[in-house]
Length: 353
Ligand SMILES: Nc1nc2c(ncn2[C@@H]2O[C@H](COP(=O)(O)OP(=O)(O)OP(=O)(O)O)[C@@H](O)[C@H]2O)c(=O)[nH]1
Image (cartoon, rainbow, N blue to C red; front, side):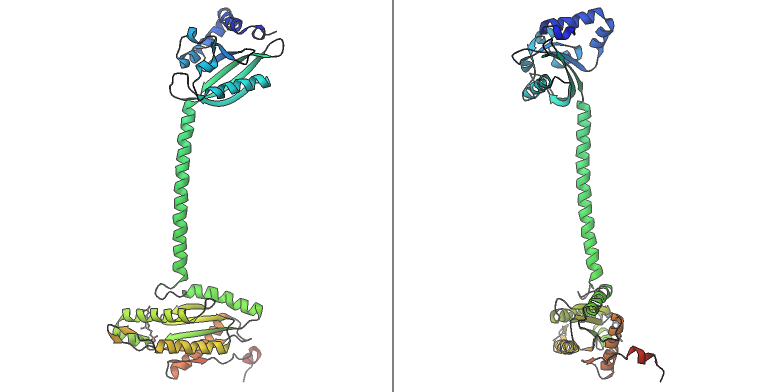
C-alpha cells in the first residue's frame, strides 16, 4: 500500500519530509528540481489543501512555507484563475487518472501572469478515493510569449501577403484591361477583337446562325494628320470609336485593327442588317460636326460589309472579303459602303479555266 495513499494530508506532508531525510537523492531532487512540485491533499468536503511544495513552487508563491502549508488552494490562487485550477483538481479526482494541461495564472496578491504545463497524478487511498494529487508544473511563459510573437508575426505576414495579392490582382486586372481595349478609342484591341471574333465565328458555325462583318477605314486620314496635326487625327479616331460604340449593340464586337482601320462583327447579323448599319455609320460620321481649333474638319469613312457564306472557312477569310469591298468603295470615291460578293465555291475555285 502506498504510504501516500494511506496518509492524512498532514501525515503525507510529513511523509515527504521523511523521504527527504532518508534518501539524500530525493532530498536533492526536491530541492534542485527546476519545475514546481506540489502535493495537494483532497479532503472529503471537496476542499484542496497545499500539503507541501518544493522550493521552486515556494519561490513562485512568494510566501514562507509556514504560511502556505496546509492552506486551502482557493486562498492561494488569485482570481480569475482560481476556479480553473480547482476544476482541474476536481477533474483529476473524478477520473482518478493523470491529467496534463496548459494553464495560466498568478498567485494571490498579484504578479505577472505565468503559463504552465502541468501534470497531475492522483494518489488513491485504501477506499479507492483520490486522497492526494502530486503535481508538477513547468513554467512555459517564455515559450508562450515566443509563440505569441510568432503568431503576431504570422498574422502580420498573412495581412501583408493578402494586401500584396490584392495589389497584384488589381494590377493584373488593369493589365488585362489594357490588353483588351485600345487606349485611344476605347474599342477592343486588335488581339482581343480577333480572340473574341474567332469564338463568335465558331459559334455561328456550330449553331448555323448568320454572322456579318464590317471593315471600316477613315477617308483621307493622312491629310487630316498632315494638315491639322497628329492630335487632331487622334481626336478623329476617338470620335469614330465613340460613334461605333453608340451605334452597335452589346453583343457586337468592335475592334481597332490598325491605324485608322476598324472592324465590327455582328453575331446573328445578316447582309441586310450589316448594310443598314454601315449606312448609319457613314451618315453619323459624315454629319458629325467635328470641330478642331474652331474649324470644322469634314470626316467620312468607307465600309465594306460581308455576310458569312458557306465558303468562308475562317473569320479572316470573311474579313478579307469585306476588305475587298472596302477597297472598291475607296476606288469608287469613298464615303459609303458596299456589300462583298459571295466567295467562289471551293471546288470551282480550284479548277483551272
Ligand atoms: N493621328 C494618328 N494617325 C495615325 C494613327 N495610326 C495611323 N495613323 C496615320 O493614319 C494615316 C493613314 O494613311 P493612309 O493609309 O495613307 O490612308 P488615308 O490617308 O486615310 O487614305 P485613304 O485610306 O485612301 O482614304 C497615316 O498618316 C498614319 O500615320 C494614330 O494612332 N493616330
